[in-house]
Image 1 (tube, rainbow, N blue to C red):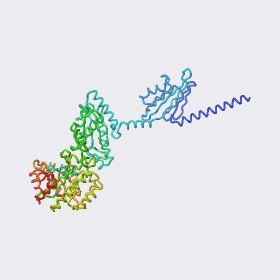
Image 2: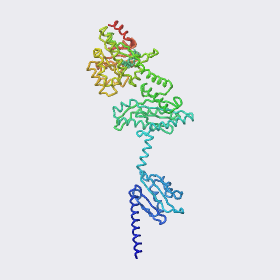
Image 3: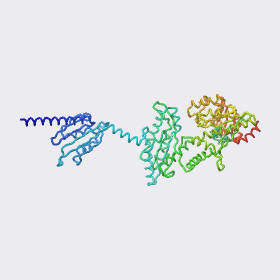
Image 4: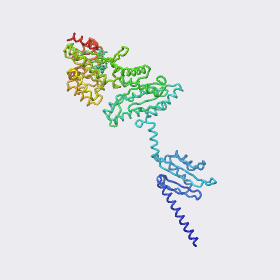
Amino acid sequence: MDDLRYQIDLLTALNQKLNNNERMYKLICETSKRAFIYINYINNTVKMVGKWEDYIDFRIDEAAEITRLLDIFTEKERGEIRRLLFIEKEGKDEQSYEAELRDEKTWVKLRVNIYRDEFGVLTDKIIAIENVTKLHNHRDELTYLAYYDNMTNLYNRNYFITKLKNFVEMAESEKKIVSVMLIDIDDFHKISDSRGIVMGDEVIQNFGLFLNDLTENYVIGSRFDSDIFCLAIYDPCGHRSVETIYKSIKEFLSHPIRLTDMTDVPITVSIGVAEFPEASDNALQLINCAEIVMLKAKEAGKNNLKFFDSSILNNFLRDVSLENKLKEAIFGEKFFMNFQPQFYTESGKIRGVEALIRWRDRDGTFISPSLFIPIAEKNGAIVPIGDFVLEESIKAHMNWKMKFDFPMILSVNISSIQYNRQDFVPKVIALISKYNMKPEELELEITESVLIDDFKSVISKMMELRDYGIKVSLDDFGTGFSSLSYLKGLPIDTLKIDKSFIDNITTDNASWIIAETIISMSKRLGFETVAEGVETREQYEKLKEISCDLIQGFYLGHPMEAKMIEELLIRNI
Ligand code: C2E
Ligand code: MG
Ligand code: MG
């Protein structure tokens, strides 16, 4: 009897233990993110554990019914899922597979494990399902981010370079050409400054999506940097020739870009093209070459396309060597000043001079300021150069004054880099005090490029200078983004009409009308008006006719050394 009691207790304890174990496994399964189907082939039982209701709305009670799971998958996945559910037929014990559900939103990972007895007969099968949508999307996103620019769907720079390298390798073996087009939106900073970053992004996105439409197997595209795009064309010809692609771009840009706020933004682009094998056989260098010509296209007035040729590379290298020479020159004092006289048109009397820097190279050749000033602006050398120019010119001015006691105005060109420095105004004031120069004898020539920067602070600096008595002149009017209407608000004293407007006034009636309009408008706005680059008597006479205040140009006087100005003053006063 005791024995029986003992057996019952033992069984009860075992049962309890089994129940506990089963409960434990069930709880573990339910808290796991997976749902399971456990099939026992020996007893022919099926158990479903976990949240199957997330995936199916039916129950599976028999092993044969597991094929009903196929219904939840998209059609194209079903073949693969069927193989997975019956991996025993392929002699496998374990396998998993990720597939999309019929709702086309959910991704699941299905895993099947099987167990056999010692004779190899199937005894158990566990099918586990897990929702991996987030992971899948995230992975998609990572793959996407690794290769694409999310604003435009174009390749990102790294992936583009890899693809371009492939193009170059392929072209090398197939003896084909690869064209690289580097495309930069002109004056993009003005767009984003005036319209804000978000609208600026919209412009980039619109243009980028358009470029994306041009891409195909042999035309790949990338957003390279903020507003810089790059296309690479394998074996350019027919519809994918550079000319045709350029034409499409021009056509697209012939209408302004319409933004979501229903405003229109017209844009133009500058494009540089370099080709394998002519420009280089190296993918990165091809891009560099394309960039060099793109910058040339910008210098040539923007809104155009330029092809790379070796002379451009030579010029670029010249600029680089110029940059190195420039560094030497600053320390080696190879600069000196020339002065070009300005005359009152009516009386022919001298009004003053414009100071123009000169640089004589080691071998005695002169290097034009139009060449080295832009480089000095880029590398910051313009600041010490500008200081030199101001001090040397003021010294020369005070020397003439001492000798001739004649009222003269000294005009000095100021680069926007100098002008925008915080210490600019105090520096100028300190200098004129140092040499006892009267502020009204100094005129600072700035170009419209300074106005691109923080307009308010540019204007307040102008006012500060003028409050102190220093004159401000706007140089090269007509070459920048000038419009007569914005002139009226500018605190300037003098307007210098660029030579390009003066050039054809005697030969071309339209040019004359334009020059005349600008000059008379400028006078009416109260500015003293200078015509620059007057080279002939006829031009001078015409300008006199409309009473342009001042004349500067080779006709009345070339830039010259300070000593020669003295001779001029002796004759002129
Ligand atoms: P800019 O300020 O407009 O100076 C006038 C330029 O036109 C000078 O060239 C002058 O020599 C030239 N020019 C004057 N009259 C005539 C003419 O009748 N015909 C022709 N063909 N040219 C004439 P330059 O000295 O080569 O200077 C070029 C530019 O370089 C200047 O244009 C100015 O923007 C810049 N620059 C010159 N000196 C300085 C300087 O000291 N500082 C800064 N920041 N820029 C300077
Ligand atoms: Mg000037
Ligand atoms: Mg000028």
